[in-house]
Image (tube, rainbow, N blue to C red; front, side, top):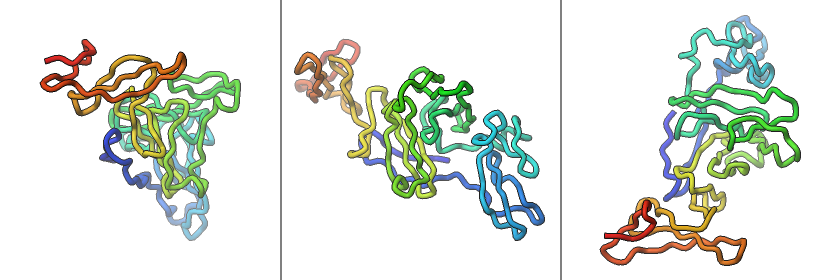
Length: 245
Protein backbone atom coordinates (compact mmCIF):
# COMPACT_ATOMS: atom_id res chain seq x y z
CA UNK A 1 0.00 0.00 0.00
CA UNK A 2 1.36 3.40 -0.92
CA UNK A 3 -0.11 6.71 0.23
CA UNK A 4 1.11 10.04 -1.14
CA UNK A 5 0.29 13.07 0.95
CA UNK A 6 1.73 16.31 2.28
CA UNK A 7 0.46 16.93 5.78
CA UNK A 8 2.02 20.33 6.40
CA UNK A 9 1.38 22.31 3.26
CA UNK A 10 -1.68 20.86 1.57
CA UNK A 11 -5.14 19.50 2.19
CA UNK A 12 -5.50 15.99 3.56
CA UNK A 13 -5.74 13.25 0.92
CA UNK A 14 -8.83 11.52 -0.31
CA UNK A 15 -8.57 8.04 1.15
CA UNK A 16 -10.00 4.67 0.34
CA UNK A 17 -9.17 1.71 2.54
CA UNK A 18 -7.03 -1.00 0.94
CA UNK A 19 -7.96 -3.84 3.26
CA UNK A 20 -9.63 -6.49 1.15
CA UNK A 21 -11.42 -9.44 2.70
CA UNK A 22 -12.68 -12.34 0.58
CA UNK A 23 -16.45 -12.19 0.01
CA UNK A 24 -16.77 -15.91 -0.76
CA UNK A 25 -16.17 -19.17 1.09
CA UNK A 26 -14.80 -22.31 -0.53
CA UNK A 27 -17.39 -24.67 -1.94
CA UNK A 28 -18.91 -26.90 0.72
CA UNK A 29 -17.44 -24.94 3.65
CA UNK A 30 -19.47 -22.96 6.16
CA UNK A 31 -16.42 -21.29 7.69
CA UNK A 32 -13.10 -20.09 6.28
CA UNK A 33 -10.46 -17.36 6.29
CA UNK A 34 -11.33 -14.10 4.58
CA UNK A 35 -7.70 -13.06 5.00
CA UNK A 36 -4.89 -14.04 7.35
CA UNK A 37 -6.63 -12.31 10.29
CA UNK A 38 -10.35 -12.59 9.46
CA UNK A 39 -12.81 -15.49 9.83
CA UNK A 40 -15.78 -15.68 7.44
CA UNK A 41 -19.04 -17.47 8.32
CA UNK A 42 -20.89 -18.56 5.16
CA UNK A 43 -24.10 -20.11 3.90
CA UNK A 44 -24.10 -23.26 1.75
CA UNK A 45 -24.08 -21.14 -1.43
CA UNK A 46 -20.72 -19.64 -0.32
CA UNK A 47 -22.22 -16.25 0.57
CA UNK A 48 -20.48 -14.59 3.53
CA UNK A 49 -23.07 -14.03 6.26
CA UNK A 50 -20.72 -12.35 8.74
CA UNK A 51 -17.03 -12.06 9.56
CA UNK A 52 -14.88 -11.21 12.55
CA UNK A 53 -11.25 -10.48 13.40
CA UNK A 54 -9.53 -13.23 15.39
CA UNK A 55 -7.88 -10.50 17.48
CA UNK A 56 -11.31 -9.29 18.65
CA UNK A 57 -12.38 -12.76 19.81
CA UNK A 58 -9.11 -14.32 20.97
CA UNK A 59 -6.44 -11.63 21.50
CA UNK A 60 -3.67 -14.22 21.92
CA UNK A 61 -4.66 -15.92 18.62
CA UNK A 62 -4.76 -13.11 16.01
CA UNK A 63 -4.28 -15.23 12.85
CA UNK A 64 -6.81 -17.18 10.79
CA UNK A 65 -5.59 -20.53 9.43
CA UNK A 66 -7.06 -23.59 7.73
CA UNK A 67 -10.84 -23.84 7.90
CA UNK A 68 -11.33 -20.53 9.69
CA UNK A 69 -9.50 -21.37 12.93
CA UNK A 70 -7.84 -18.63 15.03
CA UNK A 71 -4.21 -19.39 15.91
CA UNK A 72 -1.28 -17.79 17.72
CA UNK A 73 1.02 -18.18 14.71
CA UNK A 74 0.46 -17.95 10.98
CA UNK A 75 1.55 -20.68 8.60
CA UNK A 76 3.66 -18.16 6.67
CA UNK A 77 4.49 -14.87 8.40
CA UNK A 78 5.64 -13.31 5.13
CA UNK A 79 2.29 -14.07 3.47
CA UNK A 80 0.45 -12.33 6.29
CA UNK A 81 2.80 -9.35 6.46
CA UNK A 82 0.65 -7.03 4.35
CA UNK A 83 0.60 -3.27 4.86
CA UNK A 84 -2.14 -2.25 7.27
CA UNK A 85 -4.09 1.00 7.15
CA UNK A 86 -3.52 1.46 10.89
CA UNK A 87 0.20 1.95 10.24
CA UNK A 88 1.25 5.50 9.30
CA UNK A 89 3.91 5.83 6.60
CA UNK A 90 6.45 7.24 9.02
CA UNK A 91 8.55 4.87 11.13
CA UNK A 92 8.31 1.50 12.83
CA UNK A 93 6.86 1.46 16.33
CA UNK A 94 3.75 1.08 18.43
CA UNK A 95 0.54 2.87 17.44
CA UNK A 96 -2.99 3.03 18.86
CA UNK A 97 -6.02 1.31 17.43
CA UNK A 98 -8.43 4.28 17.20
CA UNK A 99 -11.41 1.93 17.32
CA UNK A 100 -10.35 0.10 20.50
CA UNK A 101 -8.54 1.81 23.38
CA UNK A 102 -7.66 -1.55 25.00
CA UNK A 103 -5.70 -2.61 21.94
CA UNK A 104 -2.66 -1.30 20.07
CA UNK A 105 -0.47 -2.45 17.20
CA UNK A 106 3.18 -2.76 16.31
CA UNK A 107 4.01 -1.53 12.81
CA UNK A 108 7.23 -2.71 11.19
CA UNK A 109 9.25 -0.96 8.46
CA UNK A 110 6.88 -2.30 5.78
CA UNK A 111 3.77 -1.04 7.61
CA UNK A 112 2.77 -4.61 8.48
CA UNK A 113 0.80 -4.63 11.73
CA UNK A 114 0.91 -7.00 14.69
CA UNK A 115 -1.97 -6.49 17.14
CA UNK A 116 -1.33 -6.34 20.90
CA UNK A 117 -3.90 -6.17 23.70
CA UNK A 118 -3.85 -4.66 27.17
CA UNK A 119 -4.17 -7.84 29.22
CA UNK A 120 -4.97 -6.28 32.60
CA UNK A 121 -8.62 -5.29 33.20
CA UNK A 122 -9.56 -1.59 33.07
CA UNK A 123 -6.37 -0.73 31.19
CA UNK A 124 -6.04 1.41 28.06
CA UNK A 125 -3.22 2.17 25.66
CA UNK A 126 -1.06 5.27 26.27
CA UNK A 127 0.78 6.33 23.13
CA UNK A 128 3.18 8.63 25.00
CA UNK A 129 4.66 5.65 26.85
CA UNK A 130 3.75 2.96 24.26
CA UNK A 131 2.22 0.89 27.06
CA UNK A 132 -1.04 0.29 28.89
CA UNK A 133 -2.15 2.17 31.99
CA UNK A 134 -5.02 1.98 34.49
CA UNK A 135 -8.03 3.97 33.35
CA UNK A 136 -9.31 6.40 35.99
CA UNK A 137 -11.87 8.37 33.95
CA UNK A 138 -13.96 7.77 30.83
CA UNK A 139 -11.71 10.20 28.93
CA UNK A 140 -8.78 7.83 29.45
CA UNK A 141 -10.36 5.58 26.82
CA UNK A 142 -10.50 7.44 23.52
CA UNK A 143 -11.99 5.45 20.65
CA UNK A 144 -14.16 6.12 17.61
CA UNK A 145 -16.55 3.68 15.96
CA UNK A 146 -15.81 4.18 12.26
CA UNK A 147 -18.58 1.74 11.35
CA UNK A 148 -21.26 4.24 12.36
CA UNK A 149 -22.78 5.98 9.34
CA UNK A 150 -22.27 9.43 10.83
CA UNK A 151 -18.51 8.76 11.23
CA UNK A 152 -17.82 7.39 7.75
CA UNK A 153 -15.86 9.49 5.23
CA UNK A 154 -14.77 11.77 8.05
CA UNK A 155 -11.45 12.94 9.54
CA UNK A 156 -10.63 12.67 13.26
CA UNK A 157 -7.70 13.74 15.40
CA UNK A 158 -6.46 11.14 17.89
CA UNK A 159 -7.08 13.36 20.92
CA UNK A 160 -4.69 11.71 23.41
CA UNK A 161 -1.82 12.34 20.96
CA UNK A 162 -2.86 14.96 18.35
CA UNK A 163 0.16 14.35 16.09
CA UNK A 164 -1.83 11.29 14.99
CA UNK A 165 -5.03 11.52 12.99
CA UNK A 166 -7.21 9.11 11.04
CA UNK A 167 -9.85 8.88 8.36
CA UNK A 168 -12.95 6.69 8.75
CA UNK A 169 -13.37 5.17 5.30
CA UNK A 170 -16.63 4.49 3.47
CA UNK A 171 -16.21 0.84 4.52
CA UNK A 172 -16.16 1.80 8.19
CA UNK A 173 -12.42 1.21 8.73
CA UNK A 174 -9.90 3.67 10.22
CA UNK A 175 -6.87 4.77 8.18
CA UNK A 176 -4.09 6.24 10.36
CA UNK A 177 -1.70 9.11 9.55
CA UNK A 178 0.96 11.02 11.49
CA UNK A 179 2.16 14.61 11.18
CA UNK A 180 5.64 14.87 9.71
CA UNK A 181 6.96 16.98 12.60
CA UNK A 182 6.74 16.44 16.35
CA UNK A 183 6.01 20.16 16.66
CA UNK A 184 2.79 19.83 14.66
CA UNK A 185 -0.74 18.73 15.53
CA UNK A 186 -3.63 17.87 13.23
CA UNK A 187 -6.37 20.45 12.71
CA UNK A 188 -9.66 18.80 11.70
CA UNK A 189 -11.19 22.05 10.37
CA UNK A 190 -8.17 22.85 8.19
CA UNK A 191 -7.65 19.15 7.38
CA UNK A 192 -3.88 19.49 7.70
CA UNK A 193 -1.14 19.49 10.29
CA UNK A 194 -0.09 22.81 11.76
CA UNK A 195 2.53 24.09 14.18
CA UNK A 196 1.48 24.38 17.82
CA UNK A 197 3.20 26.33 20.59
CA UNK A 198 4.03 24.21 23.62
CA UNK A 199 6.76 26.38 25.08
CA UNK A 200 8.18 29.84 24.49
CA UNK A 201 11.00 30.23 21.99
CA UNK A 202 11.87 30.22 18.30
CA UNK A 203 11.31 27.26 15.99
CA UNK A 204 12.10 26.48 12.31
CA UNK A 205 9.50 27.17 9.66
CA UNK A 206 9.12 24.04 7.48
CA UNK A 207 10.32 24.49 3.92
CA UNK A 208 11.47 28.12 4.28
CA UNK A 209 14.71 29.05 6.07
CA UNK A 210 13.93 32.75 5.63
CA UNK A 211 11.14 32.43 8.20
CA UNK A 212 10.69 31.02 11.69
CA UNK A 213 7.98 30.56 14.31
CA UNK A 214 8.13 32.44 17.59
CA UNK A 215 6.06 31.40 20.61
CA UNK A 216 5.54 34.15 23.18
CA UNK A 217 3.58 34.30 26.44
CA UNK A 218 0.94 37.03 26.07
CA UNK A 219 -0.44 36.25 29.54
CA UNK A 220 1.13 34.21 32.37
CA UNK A 221 -0.66 31.11 31.09
CA UNK A 222 -1.26 31.74 27.37
CA UNK A 223 1.20 31.16 24.53
CA UNK A 224 0.66 32.84 21.17
CA UNK A 225 2.21 31.97 17.83
CA UNK A 226 3.86 34.53 15.53
CA UNK A 227 5.44 34.02 12.11
CA UNK A 228 8.66 35.99 11.77
CA UNK A 229 10.81 36.70 8.71
CA UNK A 230 14.58 37.16 8.74
CA UNK A 231 16.04 40.41 7.33
CA UNK A 232 17.28 40.33 3.73
CA UNK A 233 20.40 38.20 3.10
CA UNK A 234 19.88 36.32 6.38
CA UNK A 235 18.52 32.82 7.05
CA UNK A 236 17.26 31.25 10.25
CA UNK A 237 19.72 29.04 12.19
CA UNK A 238 17.76 26.68 14.40
CA UNK A 239 20.83 25.63 16.40
CA UNK A 240 21.60 29.22 17.46
CA UNK A 241 17.94 30.34 17.29
CA UNK A 242 18.84 33.50 15.34
CA UNK A 243 18.93 34.82 11.79
CA UNK A 244 22.47 34.81 10.40
CA UNK A 245 24.39 35.22 7.16
